[in-house]
Image (cartoon, rainbow over all chains, first blue to last red; front, top):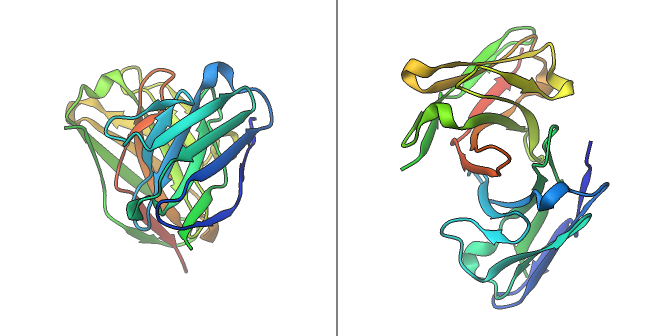
Amino acid sequence: EVVLTQSPGTLSLSLGERATLSCRASQSVSSSYLAWYQQKPGQAPRLLMYGASSRASGIPDRFSGSGSGTDFTLTISRLEPEDFAVYYCQQYGGSPYTFGQGTKLEIK
Amino acid sequence: QVQLVQSGAEVTKPGASVKVSCKASGYTFTDYYIHWVRQAPGQGLEWMGWIHPNSGGTVYAQKFQGGVTMTRDTSISTAYMELSRLRSDDTAIYYCARVSWRGPFDYWGQGTLVTVSS
């Protein structure tokens, strides 16, 4: 089973700042089958990125993803009010499909 | 537009079973997998398994084998997840999600809160 470890657990930033979220896998994630999801309170997760660096439909270009193998990063270039949420990485290269424990992005 | 609409909240007792439905619309139901994910209160996301509506084939996470059953009714584009022998730590929001072959979870249901309490 691929264990995903996200850091930091909580990230406190101000509007307009740059956010960098990390996701480290216990073993290589095949063909960059790595996704990022955003979840706001009381809502279902929403797909942000897939294939490590491809934005899902309707996702603004201030969101970007990078990485390969075991180290992946989600970057939000300039934080908007609606970006404060919990972010999860996930590997979907094969069963079991595992998620990281999440990074909470909060307003400083 | 693609929609996954889940059944309403359930309150049930330890040892009982619960069955959650997930009705799909806006796409060809049999072309995509349906995965189930749960989230305990204040916790992260936990993958439970998938069903392919075309074949009915299933794969369950090891933790849930023997306790979960995923089925579907293609005539009404609906997938079901039944969890048996419930315990208090099964209290969670249960989500269904649409997934293409080797793809991410691109559409999610709104979630169904299952509360297990004596």
